[in-house]
Image (cartoon, rainbow, N blue to C red; front, side, top):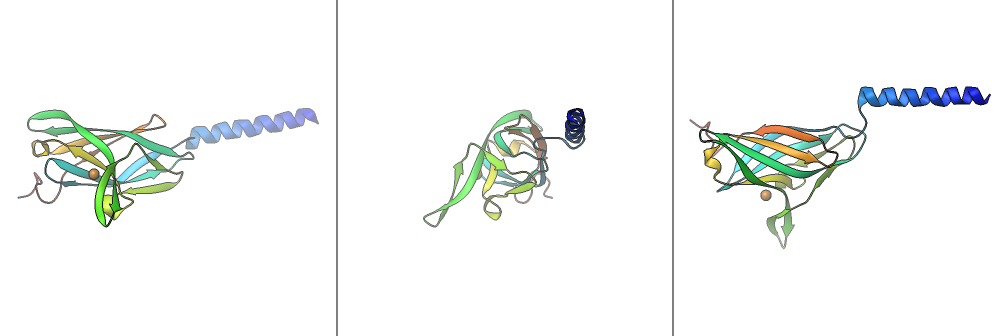
Length: 156
Ligand SMILES: [Cu+2]
């Protein structure tokens, strides 16, 4: 009787391990719908941050590398949130942006939940921006952002 119980538990543990290996335990962070808006010596990078995993995860750091005809350069980048204060829209620096399991955070500035990545520097020197989002879990999301609209290198 006791032996059967042990076997039962062992089977359950094996099933849980197999499930974890196949589906992954923890967070599964991803981004989609990337866009970029350039200002004067700064730009906002916008995207949707998804978590398709079973554990909450947070963006805790960001690194942006600009790439252009003059080469590559590590740029100053921050996690920001657009907030409304006394009817004035302003941006504040934040330490992290968290996403719950099977959830999405719209990091689309004022058009989303306020969050975005802000990058500073002489951005006209660069055509492409490599973004690395560092997660609390140790995972790193890498994607490219390219400026569109006014000031774009691709405007004819
Ligand atoms: Cu900002």
